[in-house]
Amino acid sequence: MMRAMFWALMSTALLGVTTAVAGTVTIDYPYIDVNQQNSDLGIVDTSGALTVQATASAIITGPGSSQSISPTATFTLTATYLQPDAQPGAYDFGHGSITISNGASNPLLTASFNDLVLQTGLGTTVFFSGPIAYTGGSLAGALPGGELEGSFLLSAGTTDLSQSFSGNNLTAKVGSVVPLPPSLPLMLSGLAVLGLGRRLSRQTPRIAPRGA
Image 1 (cartoon, rainbow, N blue to C red):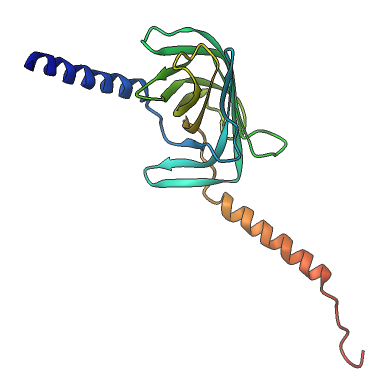
Image 2 (tube, rainbow, N blue to C red):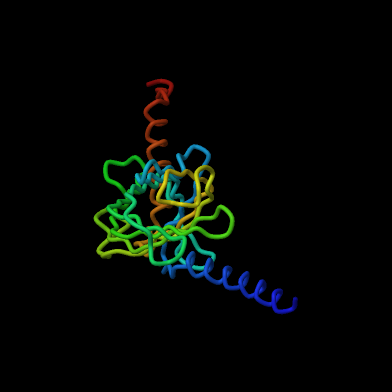
């Protein structure tokens, strides 16, 4: 009886350790903070074709320090299922790309990857992680690449991620990236105020002085 209880506790502990390791990747500062919003697609996989859409709203520059991405940007990821991973409950996705864009003419960041690992955890939690290569965008600068890691909750389908599935409650980190200049938000707000002032001055009628 005691021996059975011991092995049950050990199995639970080991499962927790495996899940924690599978979902933990060292992400250097600064990194882009990604979260799924109500208007986002979330996670959809159709026969191995994976599409992820969420919102990138801030760059985390250090512990307790962040810079807003304004306007917020759309994070989009596409990938194709490759094969089961060596780790139990893990699946490899490749031929993938990432785009972070806020509607400007050029995306803030573009990247590609060859091996993104999705691993099931406790319950319906799925962790994902993998190295990415930057292919463009102002937030990439001259950096060759970084890491992507995050998690989501399965909402439909099985825990066999080689099949069709869907998910939500996605959170992710894309790092390391080039942080926005600290003065950029002030510059943008200053330009906006300046532009508004000019429009008001043009719209305000000029009153000629008396006796003129």
